[in-house]
Length: 518
Image 1: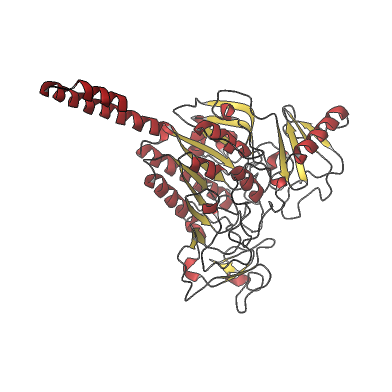
Image 2 (image 1 turned 180 degrees about the horizontal axis):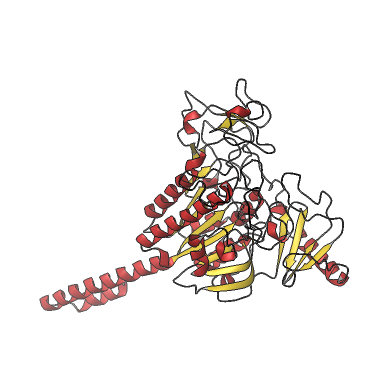
């Protein structure tokens, strides 16, 4: 552009030529401006919608006939639906950590289900998915469930809540402090508890002992509108007892029935606020995690009890977000990835009719196990990618995992991935290849399974084969090694370990090699 202007100035010596030159300059500048705008818009927006405890069979695009989820199905039908899409762990915190950090959860000792007052899980200064996209020029935001720790040890919730999402690469955050069944029952916007009056009604939080005079669900069941089945019998808020003890902060307490609307409103506002620049939104739904308390608009709509109702509520929210993208003319060049942090569970701490009203619905979708399990239903989850501008509708059997978002999206936006375990599977995620990962470690700490090709190996593990009498799920633990061909035996009914000792030994060695990698 500079050279063009110099040439125009050199040859524009007459008045007539000067006018022509000015017109030409304006035209060139206009074209250049349009080109710059198009190049900026070419960089896609990115939204990751992350459900909580949603099973492989909980959405209709994966075979559900009792729960119909048209808005989630829109992502699958207009994009790529993966049949071998995985979270890294059968529980929440480790999967979320791996997605955002690009690090296997077994490499982080504290990457297990965290209490509500746990410190931030991440090591500051290391690359994360949001920090990588921030460096690529994206405005990054997280809205919804967090459960990855906040602050440091003995944090005072009445002051700045830091470090948190904003310290690992998010430019904006509006999150639940922990989980909806753990105290403190508040939202945190950037570094502040939303609606808190710290001078007149400060928050106190403890996971050791109750505060004097504060009622609990165990001692005062008459105060409850939803009763615990196991645990979840401590501090009472909104007629529901939680895990942990809390006092004060009355003006900041969230209302369960409004939580979905609160997070949807913030997500839509985020999209509108940053519609003129590339943005990344991690929209972390809290459904269908317990306590399942749908808004009255959805109560009773599924016929399957509150668990079914909140899945319908989540599906509606996805539709509302899509409507906003359509209205803003952003949908065509926005990558939307939908998945879940782990597999399904029915009774997970409250009497909410999830077991008694399940009917013919099968949340596992023909898989074995569920949340907490090393069997496939613990980690194989709904997984779909929609990008109308670039991705054609398809069904893919490629092995893909949430841990690979950082490396794959780094390749897309021209950044270098420095996370240790994230792999570039961009071609699989965009439908250019039907090959994804070669292998994948699943689980956390010393509890692992290993998927390679069509086979999954579960090494010997100590512990119970069942979770407990309330959570009726097979853990996958056994003193015997287990080997299954998932292509031929989706339900993992035929242990092939004795028939293939060489394969067992080879896969065991591969697990050790991956685990020893620094």
